[in-house]
Structure formats: C-alpha cells, structure tokens
Length: 425
Image (cartoon, rainbow, N blue to C red; front, side, top):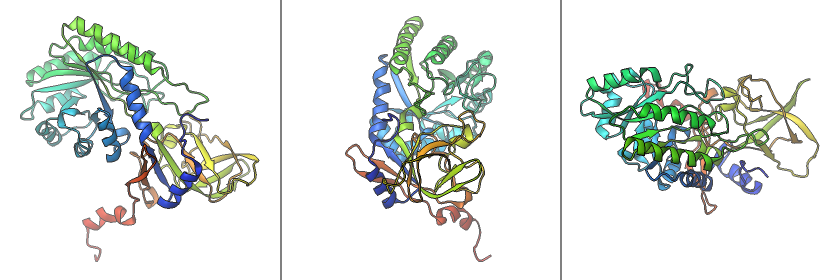
C-alpha cells in the first residue's frame, strides 16, 4: 500500500467527485498536522522558529491549520503577507522574502511591522530610503545549491537568489550607511537529493557567514526538505537525523557567539505535498501506432509540475465498473487542453519524453486519482483555454468534508475585462 497516496476509500472519492464535480482538489487536514508535528518534534534546540513557506499552498483553510500548529510564515509577495494576516497571523510572525521590490511595498511592510529579508544589495539600498525602518535580514547565496535541476536550484552561481557570499561585506557597508542593523542571515538552497548532506554543508557555510554579523539574532536555513513522489526510486530524508544535526550545530553556534541565537527554518512543500489529491474523470481513451492515451478532464492548468519540471506524480484510477477487464495496458495520461505538452506521464528528467504507465483497462467515467499535489500545483493553477478553476475541499480529521474554495466560473474569468470596458462598446 502506498504511503504517499490518499487512503480515502474509492466510494468516498466518487461521492466527492459527483458532489463537487471534477476536476477537484482534495486536501487532508490529518496529513498536514502530521507533517507539522514531525518537523517540530525532530528539532530539540529550544530557540527555534518554524515558518511555513506559504507559496506552496496559500488557501485560508490551510493557513489556519498551520497557524494552529504553532508555525509562523515565510511570504514571497505582499499579497501573501495580506493573506497570512487575514488567516490570523500577527505581523511579527511574518517574514517577507521577495526577489522583486518597490518602495511602496517596502513602505507598507515596514508600517505593518513585517520583517524584510533583503535578497540583493539594491534591496538594502531601497529599504534604507523607507521611513521607520531600523532592522532587516539578508538572504545569502552560499555558493552552492541542491536543486534537482536549475529550475529548482536556489543556490550557487546559476541561481538568481540571494546576495552572493563574496558580496556580504558590501551588504554590511550598505546597511550601515543606510542606518540598518542586519539581525538575521538567511540561505535557501533548493530541493535536491534525499540525504541530509546538502543541508549539513550549507548549514556550515551559512553559520560561517552569520558569525561575522555583530547584531545577529537569528539564522534561517530556509526550506527545501525533499518529498517522496516516486516510492520506487526515492526514500524519505532522515528527518530525525536532520533535526539532531541542526540542533547540535545551533547549540555550539550560540556558545561561540556568547548569546542565544534563534534557529529558523521555513519548510513549505514538505508540509503540504502529500496532503493534496487531484481528482479528474476519464473523458476519452484513444490510440496511435505508438501509444494508448487516456484523456482526463484536467491538465497542466491544474498541475503544471510534470510539464514544467518533468515531475513525477503517483497516479491510479478508481474504476466505475470494477468488474471490467482486468488486463493491464500501458497508457499515457494526458490532459484536456489544446496543448501538446499537456501530459502527466513523462520522464522525470525534464526532457518531456512520454513515459506510459500500466493500468487496468480504463473506460470513460473512471476516476483519476493523482497524488502529491498539495504543493505548487494549486498555487500555480491557471485559466488556460478559459477553463474554469476547480473547487477545493478539505477532508477534516473527523472525516467530514468542507468546501474551502468554490469552483471558478466564466464570470470570474471575465470580471477584470468587464470592469475595464463597457460591454456595449
């Protein structure tokens, strides 16, 4: 039995699909809380703040669950900050790290009391012009990363993120001239392999940089905890060993600094990835001389990761007629968009090459169950081909099901256009 796919019975999945229509995002509260607690209990260092990188999944219902678990927030845009505030997070619990910045955004963040993490020398200069600012954090690039590809690598020479480590002294000088105290040092390297070795290397590089800041209050090691999507190829990272290594390093670092330095981390994908399932209905089965295709009523507009990154997602089908033929066939699972790249079963190397998977004979009306869509699938959804966005439901710990986001409509798609001109024109 899969440990990463939903264990909701097929009968209940069919009921949800029929009640709320497909395509449908299904999120499970119990999984989110379990992941939050797993991370919390793995770290024994007492001066720890765990932030949720909310870009992974920003629905209000999800943010409220994570707030109840005692997490704080890492936000990447002003709107993410505002959504976190609406979900009940206090300004001092929110940390803003954005690659782009304007004076107006920084001014509002400062006025609201949100700590800004500067990711470039220009951002430090910009923040220095904002009235009322006194402190900031900086995001550093320690010189190496751990992404599976350049698209998911957030450290090293090929990454746009952070202030490169050889420019840290410049950052100090600019901050001093601007009247800013740098109280935090941040680094995030991406989501790479399933060992703790990249974390340990970057941890040591980041601590070496952080030790040179006289006003240091915290070190943030970012997120990037790897998630298992393919159980035949991947193994979970040893979270306990990771937590133990971080805790021991921070104890030693605080002793070296002569005061208690707070440890911060900001997992996102790890917390929510396994909590999400995408349901879609088979609308056609067809063949070419080379492939047998099954077309489902969803696409890259609801989970762009296979097309964008070559990502693997576990897929199974619940059949309307379980007594149908049991012979297995190799199918390419494809979406309903008018787009050649709208395919879910591709090689996980970013090449886009089709990679069929075996399923028992499929028919129109069967239900696709795609796992591990809790992170970056929903938040990167779009209305390509003018398709309505799916509804989202939350399966609560008591088994009840609540709609947490309604289905999209043509009115939603057209609203901004309608407001921009007179339809009578």
